[in-house]
Image (cartoon, rainbow, N blue to C red; front, side, top):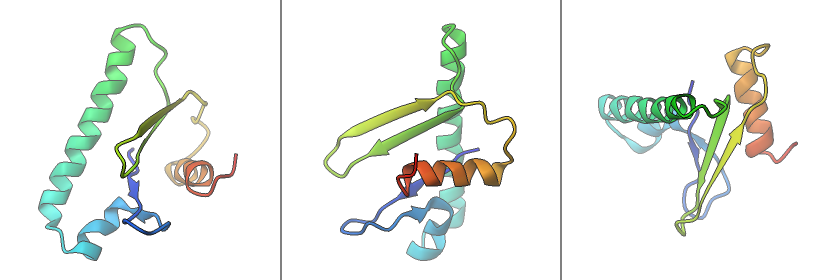
Length: 100
């Protein structure tokens, strides 16, 4: 499961990636291919952690700023009791709305 959000330049609003094709007239097929590529890359990174005997994370948050700064947060919380909607809401609360 992969969630991607971004904030347009000059806005504090967060746009969910699945809204991009409709909001910006992006070809759905191209968007889906790129979304799948991103998912595959994140999955490959998770597998690298396992291959090198590192504890596999349950949640990765990558923040990119428009000035080029990047931050990665690996979370190891047990999320097995949450369904996909609950996982997304928990992540949104922590990273989009600043609730800890």
